[in-house]
Image (tube, rainbow, N blue to C red):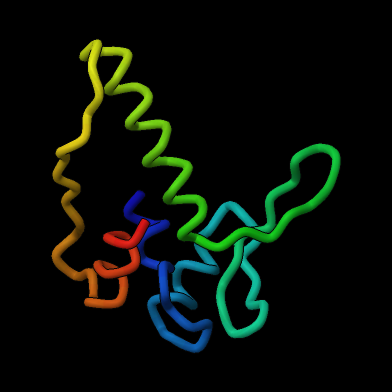
Length: 95
């Protein structure tokens, strides 16, 4: 999640984003001024925002917590690295 979070809400000319793009195992492109992952579903290639990937991860975490706890996990705390900027924190809060 840390690597994903670092690219959330960054523009492609941001040094942090450039570093992430070169280290990413997925193809990361800029489309309409925002960074997107290229995902191959087997049937087609999709371009998704980092926020959408984070949303999928959080949904899976909630599903896993529900199966372990046997009840809904509605009140959770998600921590982020110290070097997260306000844009990244706000984007993850939105997700």
